[in-house]
Image 1 (cartoon, rainbow, N blue to C red):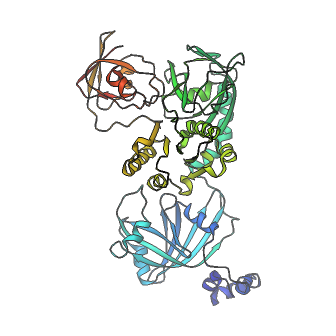
Image 2: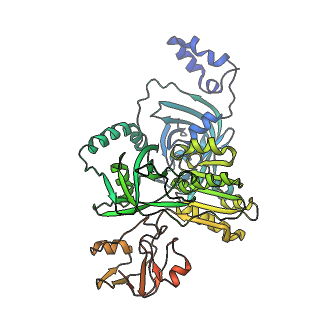
Image 3: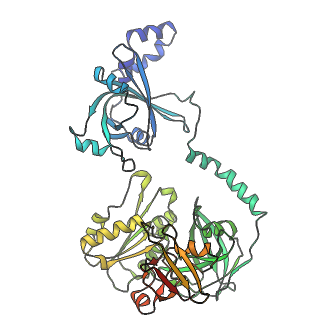
Length: 522
């Protein structure tokens, strides 16, 4: 039985050309071999849904071919059936050449390219043009949540044939992300060369806890694990899961600062603290300093570990939800829960499996209790469904990006279990339609104006005022100062109600003011 693509393309005139140029015999194998299934396999589906562009050909009423380039975010061409693909069509130059051609002749041919891997897939099919008024559910399946323009129509293609094509003459080309991966070894070498001319730090910090950097491991391209031990090898102060260290760094301006990092190692270990640091190239410079300047043997003087995110002391089951670098405190929690024999499960979501710190060790240690989800594979946590499946007394611990935490809070509120939800943030709250205010620093009698577009730290820094910050996200309480007058707009997660109302403490790293002026004891 002939292959489908040969049946479509090997017309009498094509066969005559093959005979003339001596390839007829070689091509006959496509006509006499067993027909491959027209249903797309996992290989074709993965390839199709990873493309961010393709070429399509239609034919007009006069027989002229028309080739058009189609582009969009990766995955805009969707597989919606075993032999059916489709994509949303938006208003363009409004010439409607392809649409008009397909009204006369519904046949279409597509070429999908992966230039970096030198792969090419050809598709043939018949097109059905669909409008939202006709099939709204189908249109909804083809929408891109990140591109909210109105869909004029959708192209639904029932495949008649497909064929992988020879890569011989495909010139490799690379997208920016692919090029970055190829350049990584060069950048590593350049970083090593730059390290030779960078200042070398042998000791940092002024705290009571002395630590020595004893080991470093690169967990992912952007996450580095750092092991810290006592200089004399003695036991370190005991901790519980959820504790964090404030590591001394230099900010972008070279000023001394501290940054807060969760201790990810097993709390039962007394010989070492391990933290994992995500390189944030657009951050305030703390993580970049650690990646660039922390070296083996570096002596640190830190504050004693603190814990604002400890596990409750009940025997209730626990659900751990980690997003990205938020795995660090939850990794320690999983170890503590396992040692207690307490039931738990750990759900870990990240951009891709390659971006998941500690993935291999977590899989080995926790097996079926670990659930991994990759955005690259369109795997996302359905918060409401997941929380609804838990036992009524389950305690839920979440650490990750703001969007993940907001989803967990909304689901917990809907299910009436907000009191069982415990969160730790890793990013500062976003400012939305803020108001300006002023800050009077009582000790220096200096007044600083904070505009609606500034954060309080930005305004203080612009005025030459230096405060000590930790996480910069309102999670550690390092920067807390006392409010002497005015109404504070608290936005941190570190301070308790008692600390806010009775001790009048305030975290300037993320918080603002309800009143026109705040008076701070600094």
